[in-house]
Length: 310
Image (cartoon, rainbow, N blue to C red; front, side, top):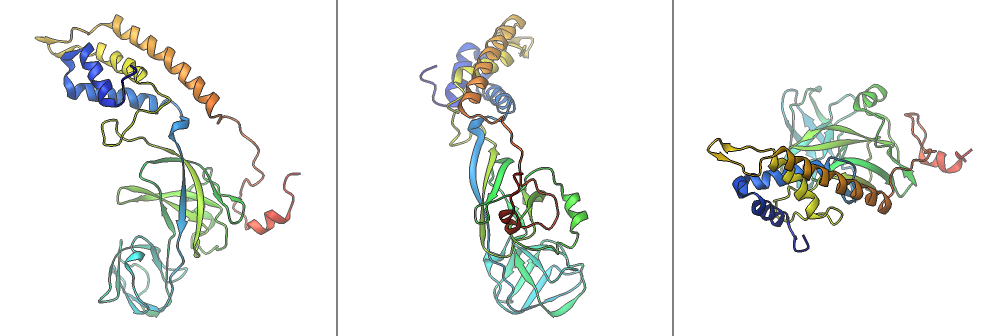
């Protein structure tokens, strides 16, 4: 296996063992085997570090909104294409809707839903980032911090329902944000609500568990911690349980004894790799978090001025 450099190499090795599967099924078996390994645990090679940014709020001028229309006219102020994807609202009793398009000639925003708030002219408004997108390979949060305030942002234990009960108008303001919760899927990707909503430019450091590329997508690489022979053993187990495409075109590798052999080899090797992953990247130690946040109005300044360790 020393010359194995890609998932295609593993696929070719599978075909050498069992030509009957053909190249397309061979790739599917490799995909299934790799997916089994990925889903087995939270591997260290899936952890990534990234940044989440919030731009400054834009609230210059006034806006006209009409009940039942998805178009907002900015009467004073200037719409900007960079506002696409950000949220628009006119006040605490108004909807918070996403800007999907702008017309710089007519000076209008197009919203993702029709306006169901009260119609109004020359209203004060805000354009800001209430809902945050995540990297395309995002799977789940590990941690998130605000370096400017030494604050750990809570990434679990709070749901959108709890947030709606606590602050239905999203009227609570202030820095730093205390929690980030799953909000919705927008354009096929998950969005999260950072609460309280931040109105000034800031950034946050996040560690997350990623999703690897499809093994046969451009740029996909075999993880260093998972040798190709382990993936092959798992795929061969599946191969040995495939009877063939038809009675006249049987899989000569089909055998429960073969399947059991490869499964035993895989189980032995994957157990060793999990042990090595623990030794390389210890993650199962937990500490009591003295900033375990309730939804009370406690800000970072309070926490910094009080000794919470005792």
